[in-house]
Amino acid sequence: MQLLAVGLNHTTAPVALRERLAFAPDQLGRAVHEARNWFGRLEHTGGNEAAILSTCNRTELYAASAAANPLDAGAHFLADFHQLNYAELRPHLYMLPQHEAVRHTFRVASGLDSMVLGETQILGQIKDAIRTADEAGGLGTYLHQLFQRSFSVAKEVRSTTEIGAQSVSMAAAAVRLSQRIFDKLSEQNVLFIGAGEMIELCATHFAAQNPKSVTVANRTLERGEQLAHRFNGKAVRLADLQTQLHHYDILISSTASSLPLIGLGMVERAVKARRHKPMFMVDLAVPRDIEPEVARLNDVFLYTVDDLGKVVQAGLENRQAAVAQAEAIIETRVQSFMHWVDDRAVVPVIQNLHENGEAIRQAELDRARKLLARGEDIDAVLEALSKGLTAKFMHGPQQALHRAQGDERAQLAELLPQLFRGRR
Image (cartoon, rainbow, N blue to C red; front, top):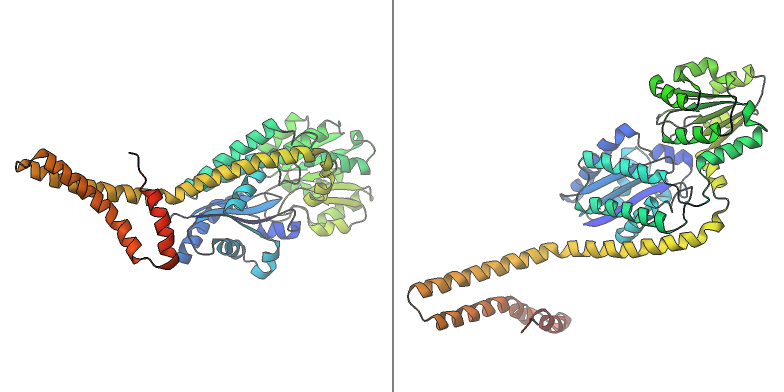
């Protein structure tokens, strides 16, 4: 089995491409199932494993496969599933085999590969992805072990280093950017679109600035009301935004919608109704919730998840010591995991040796019992038993040595004495 990770993230691809490769939550189970079949069809192999992680910053396929060229196969699967041009997609993909894939997995789980260094949200996202993959039948021995160890590594990194200290979250960055537009957030009406974890985090940060009002727009009104209640706000339906958008000065959106929720025309009407009073918008969704053309409007300040990423990088140099410490921990755990992988690779060989040895032992034992049943001398039977066992165990290695030639014979001649140096 070969382990691999294939994907793209905020450092290799712009948001316009990331949203095209993103998997909607209701697609993930089917995609995992199809990925396993994709690897299996190539070489008619079984036991392939797959899991898919899709967030606003990354889309990654993790797999364990016995197929030939599994990295290339994984990359083609991503392109094929989303009906993308492979030649266009390939320059933005990273294709990581074996220990590189393991190292990448550990770094992602530990927050070292995130736009916000040391952030913890990614760990929950990985756990959700693994739960989905497991339910879809995508996990086997290799990926199960890989991700269980990634969780342990992440916990160790967070508990023994300062990797998360002083990190600027995306939510905090959104507040910071809004303060460049509005002097006092206490005089602004804030709208949150969605009711997920990221919106909840943003709402917490903005609520701390005591805005004039807080409103949550969500497809499910009940869930929106639950979140709004926490911040003394109100909830509206998404459909209501067509007529109410102009009431809001600040808009933060993060949903799982596959299509934009806020179009150019809707915002143009809102700006006109506001008499060109500025609007601050942050689109944290991938695929995007707000049509990118909105950014061209003079009175609208639209930021994407990539724009916020530039803000959160401030102060990164202060955490380099913690990064180095975390990387050292990860490298040690990668070596440990690869040792486990190597051990797994020889398990079938060891099992085969045990089975052959047991068959030889049983055959010689049956022969000895028959001799004893005929009244043969016990010492003679034991002598024959020991010689028979020795001869049969040595037959294979001796034949291999006789058949080998040149360098192969020299290697066997050096190796065999080590293999058969038993205890005396």
